[in-house]
Image 1 (cartoon, one colour):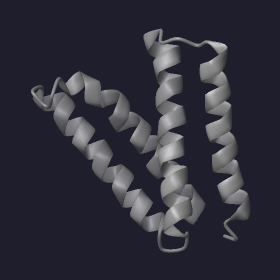
Image 2 (image 1 turned 180 degrees about the vertical axis):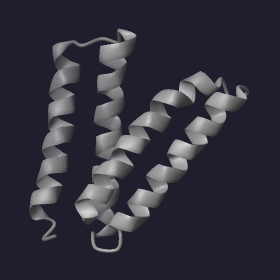
Image 3 (image 1 turned 90 degrees about the horizontal axis):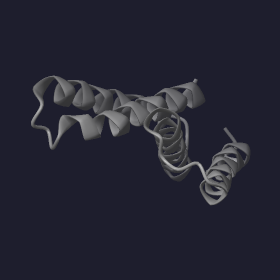
Image 4 (image 1 turned 45 degrees about the horizontal axis):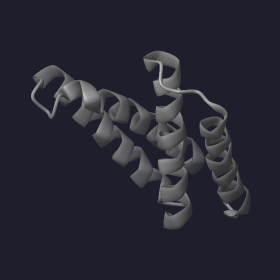
Length: 106
C-alpha cells in the first residue's frame, strides 16, 4: 500500500506543479486554493508512504514522479520542446525511479 500512496503523492505533485503557474504568484484565489490543496494532498500521501518506505527512496521517487510527470504535461499540453536530449533525460529519471523501487526491499 505504501507504493500506491507514493504514486498518488507523485500524481498530486504533478497537479500542483502544473497549476502553480496559473496562480500568478498566488494572486488568483481559486487557482491558489486548488494548488495548495493539491500540495497538501501530495504531502499527506507522501507521509503515508513513509510509514513503510525509507525516506531517501520515497523522497527521490516522489520528486522523480513529479519531475517526469510535469515535463510530460508540459510537452503534451503546453507545446514545450520534445527533443531527444529531453526524452533521454526523462528515461534516465524513470530508470532511477524504477531502480530505487527495485532495490528498496519494500
